[in-house]
Figure 1 (cartoon, rainbow, N blue to C red):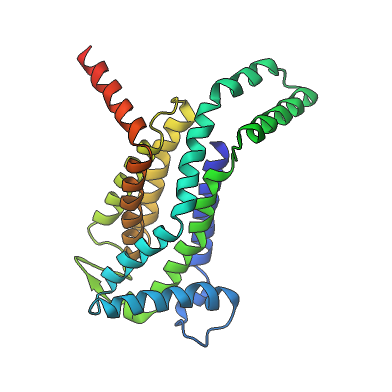
Figure 2: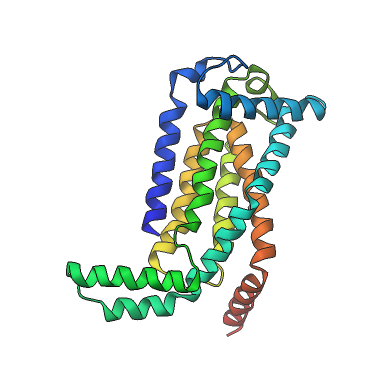
Length: 257
């Protein structure tokens, strides 16, 4: 969990760093040079504009459709993340026994703990880093979205609903929705898992970070995040349905008592 928090903090730092690059003021064209421009930013810009034109010129709808397409593309990774999370939860009793067995903090004991922990993961086919892959995959996509929006005038100047795609949400509605949907999505992901202080902290830190992030960046990014969260909520519901129903039944039973 600590590694995941550090990863998210690193993600936000990289986003802030790259969003301030001088290239953000240069229009993106087929002639734009560099790996980043040719293989990330321009393809995203072209995809958004092509889909938007097919939808009657609505770049907001284009971003929604492209977001869903991207989510479908990385769906196998997200399913793997969910399954890995459930597998890790199932191993918690055995992991706790190992921690108790090797409770000494000397280097030799801790090394033995790490070795047996990795052996346990290998035995059950669990990859403890699987939960980080979707975040790592989304980092260049989100940063690429930012550059594609800001460097494609047709997108940046387009109005959708109550906001301009290239400007901040004037009423902070999208950032708040982004934070709420992030909270719901995380709460659903944690269903069936044993609560601990780190998880409880993460449940609140991530939505707050997303709200702060969304307030300071173009509305199109908030739109991308909100649509992606709604997709994830639906996906998590279908994958973790039994856990969610069990948690709801437990809460209902507790309330009756």
